[in-house]
Image (tube, rainbow, N blue to C red; front, side, top):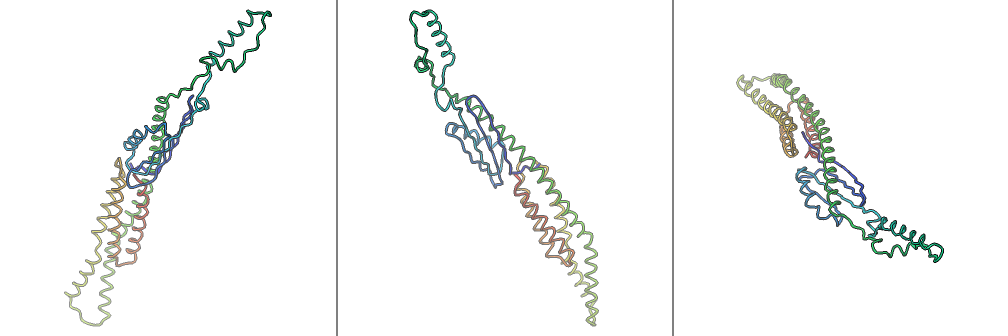
Length: 291
């Protein structure tokens, strides 16, 4: 089953510390070429991401972008200990109630509360938690990319198989008409000789007809075309990277189509050869996107 080298996937995740987004896109390339963009705080993930790519993908130019946005509290670097603030407010209210109207006191100032030890705390970013989340997010995004490439691979396989059927029909049509075409050419040759109004040795005539038949014999090319079609169909059922093997088969199919064209002695055969080359080129273009 072929996989396309073209795909796109994006995933996001929200958490108390902020948000993560991961985007992976791939296009066709002869080899696997991952390009990874990470924030500095997650730079240590690059070897892990690269290894995951090698394990899941075999060909394609793959662009991976991971973005981290910390929450406002994390960005400012300070957080308020609300539990301690509530305790201070309760304690201050108890003091005011205990003193009554004898010694009135001013209301508790927020600035005074902020100066109390422990009210302002340095925000702590749990790097390990973010790294773990980033790994999981990338894995999910990569899985979605693989699904996309598989769906496109199915579409490509369908288009290739349609053209294989068309090629097979052309091959069979040429095969069926070749005896009639050769017979017609023999008759034309004999008629030309008769028009010359000269005596031709029977053996020489037989020899010329044999040469003509040999030059126009395309059974071998038709057989090889049929064999190559079977092989292409077989490759399409295989797992893993099959694009290069398919590309090689397109070269072989094109070679046989060119030979068929060079041996053509009738317009129908010439037109069939041209149609074959068009279909083969269409398949080759599709195969350029197969992993």
